[in-house]
Length: 159
Image (cartoon, rainbow, N blue to C red; front, side):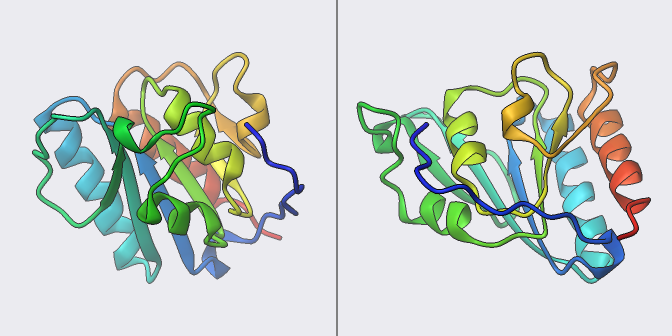
């Protein structure tokens, strides 16, 4: 990851946060429903929410909600992403960026590393510490538990 500039990271009280990014990877219909519910909860609390994911070329979009995506055909040989949607997501100054995935991968690591988000939130995984300002318990195996726990922790932040 070639982030030549250090991004100033700062955490704001979640109640004061306005712009939220959600980077996600889901694998089946149940997780899609969970993610939609999470996004709706953020929107219902007055947050502006942008959503981004990654597809391998040839995969079919089965998600029935508004989001942006990039594909493996848009990843250059050195890992840079050549996608306007992904670049806009990376460049936006989100108050919080939630990584909603039980698994992850290099494409997501790139977006997290390059993101201008003030506070990147994800599940605790060994070796992924540089990608997050806040990591929550790794004992969740289900996406709904993971998202609920991340939101619960973030909602307690008072700055």
